[in-house]
Image 1: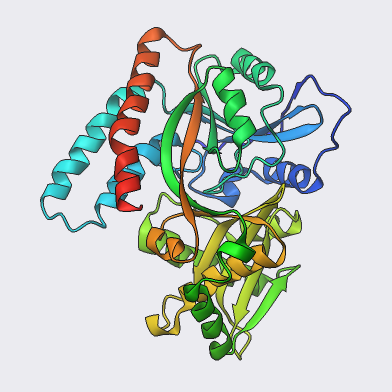
Image 2: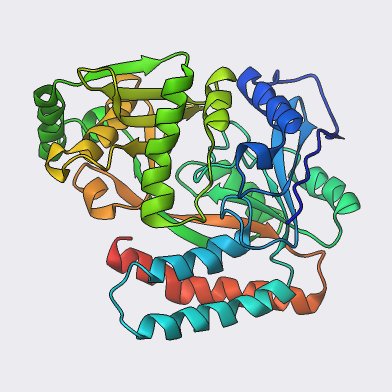
Length: 379
């Protein structure tokens, strides 16, 4: 895969309302200057950004590549990650057969162009928060993108009726197709729905008994940036899937330097970070694009519980609605979270009719078989 980066700005009806949010502008400028593959080696796609009505929207653009991180390549999200997930299930030889079936299902999607994508408002996180962008200028944006990428489909990740209801309505009105992606866990009022839970009270007692020092980091030393990277890598890429983004220490440092993400950590008596959570706040919502803990410590130390508590407590203290992302469904339900189906919104109406048929058929398949699987199993 080629490693291409671009700092081109696509202007679409730029106006004088709503000033650009400074952290987003700083983030876009820095990533465009350095190059996304330098910061996330398994995200070898083009990075650009567009402006509309003084709002910046980062873009990740894939030209047919496969095998990279699911946060920039939809083929990895639906095919590659599914194969990796099968490896964690105790299915014996049946796993190989299922993996072959999933790979076969990916062939028509590749023929339909799933590898050629322009993902709008994509920050390279598992969860993108779209802030106060409610779909303004959606038609003009996709028409402008069509002039440059007529063979690509246009997508917006992390769309759901809980965190982005107005954007959902705008997408539906503009004829976008919704592909179910995963089940995420949300809490409307952490003070009322998270803090009083018995599981949370036990987590808080664990934090006290562990005698860790809780610290909100405004700046990162090189040592802390590397430690945060190592904790994340150990959990997401070594334990789960190499299709999770390969975040580098330079990426972690950039997130803090641009003030897009802040980190809350738990240090032991020697000052070593034992658990951490990265926080992204936009328009009254909080999500956790990075979490990690020292997996070399005994499970009885409860470091995952401490890492999770860091975010719930932060949301409760700041009166933020809490988007707890996906995974660990039972754990999060016990702490007051409710499941929501999250979607990849796709615009494919400009593609050949044969390709549109594949996209629509895949959407129907996901609604009929994948969504019930998520809901019934609490995944």
